[in-house]
Length: 256
Ligand code: PGA
Image 1 (cartoon, rainbow, N blue to C red):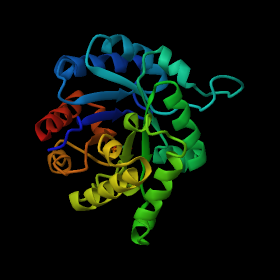
Image 2 (tube, protein in one colour):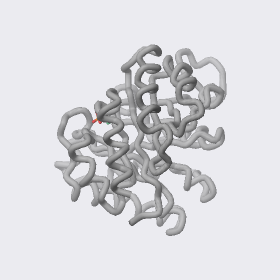
Image 3 (cartoon, protein in one colour):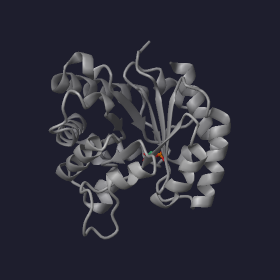
């Protein structure tokens, strides 16, 4: 049994209008808005953050964004800063998601700037790492994960580290219905924990939540969440409906 509180975060990606977000958040708050066993975060698109915030206000469900720019303000057309997210009461931000890396060219160095800017603004980064299918087949999974993790966390202090959340998301399992086996997932999670020990020392590394992401569903969640180093989930598809998202929160509560 771990002392880390499980965390279930919903990554809505480019789905839902602000009216849709009100409806979905209303259902989530009604079902799990008062429980405190599991930390619950929803990450709507930017355009729905303000309307979601109003529904989540006063509940235990927290608000996150899916991305941000490292600079505080300026000539960055189309971008959003940490301060803007804080002003809407966001507490978390997903950074370095594989879709951002693959489609928008985000490098470890750029993701690192965002991580540092998020922490400076009291936003908790959910730093995503994970290998592609080709990398897994080439046997380079751990090397890829190590490079992304160490690159993303460069310059993070021991004081800041416990607020960081890491999400291990094998790219080949995202949105594909192809979930990693519990052994595959736990192996990488334990490896990440070991890297965190080297970076920050054992006591701090034991506080960091490491989420699994990639086709996590109510049916496969209990087994994944029972693993020693799997502290929750970053949920895509199954976060778009209240029923499956709430079932995942309940699975995390049962696994604690
Ligand atoms: P999925 O997405 O649950 O739809 O596989 C997870 C993610 O990309 O964060």
